[in-house]
Length: 486
Image (cartoon, rainbow, N blue to C red; front, side, top):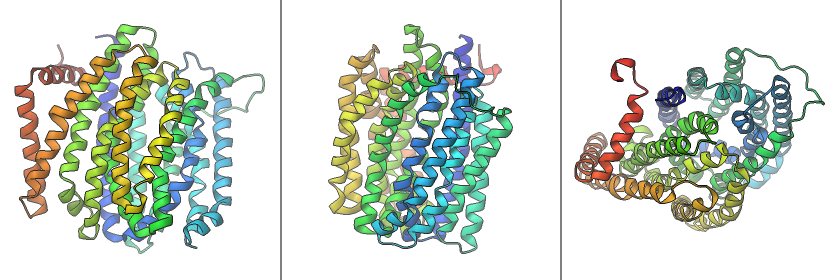
């Protein structure tokens, strides 16, 4: 295999390991803090981040993606990008702080104001971090990125649990978010080993804005789609239901993070390098697609089936009402995951305008579908997510052939095969078994084994699935130590 292919395989292996480590830390945080704090306390912070969190998208401005995919990036250009990201981050912090009284009025909760003022400054810290992280990604330094992610989350999780145990209530979560932002900045400064020089007016970065603006618009629309429901839920139903909805969504993000990490950290720089070689480009896209469709699609579907025991084991009995939310959101996540590789394709080829127009047409409709479930509370919103993402998956499959030159029929066939033959049936089998077992630990074990049995049966009985598994194993084998390689 080519040197770039080996870099991609090793990078995927390192990033996957990083995501597993972060998964463990995230689960630890969810387990401990959810057992100490009430749904209303957790919901209070979620109501704030649902609104001001859009600034985290704005402060990037799509410039990190532009820096990663650029064929050439000079030192003065990188310096100018740093100062732009820092300035935008500071501006976002000031706007978020100024909006604190308005948010307190919107949610009819005075406690919202100090929380908003505290969290506002995370955007300045993130703005200073942006180009350091983009440089590490551009240089394919996956090991350093993984260590930074793990260390920063470990520090923030330790601080948050300590604060929660000391009775800091929802401020434990606020401190966690602030600590994570500080740790991320410091570690990137140490590992990046460069200090920005003063900005230069004679060095243009217009091309990065031209590339990044459609990404900014796309990400803002995606953020609104994922967070307007929380804001609406908080305004109509209050902090308690928001807490249930937030924890259900956080549990969903655990397996989804296993998709976002490898795809964002590995797929974009690798695909950007081979975008002019159609044959190699198609090969890498197909491999990344198989990883997301099978490995992570299965994880989400099985999670939906095991939602009941998962919620009881991880969060405790007080979160019992979150179980059906986890099931529905996880199923919607299966269809959401199937479209993630397409986004990487567009960005790596510089087709940001096309994907922006696609999102501009579809995101408002999806948001309307999701919010239509608001009168029925958290479960209604969860069902809205499922309907919206299923429809978007179908619609994107129809249009992707017009936007790119990928073999859409083959990609669509892999998606349908993974969902219809392997993922959803495995989740359904797991759920059926859990209804027969009262003890949550035994239900989790029995349901998990039943889903594995179904997956094994599908591999044995379906030759196309066996071919897909062989391709997946070949990709994984290339990332293993030398004694496993030929």
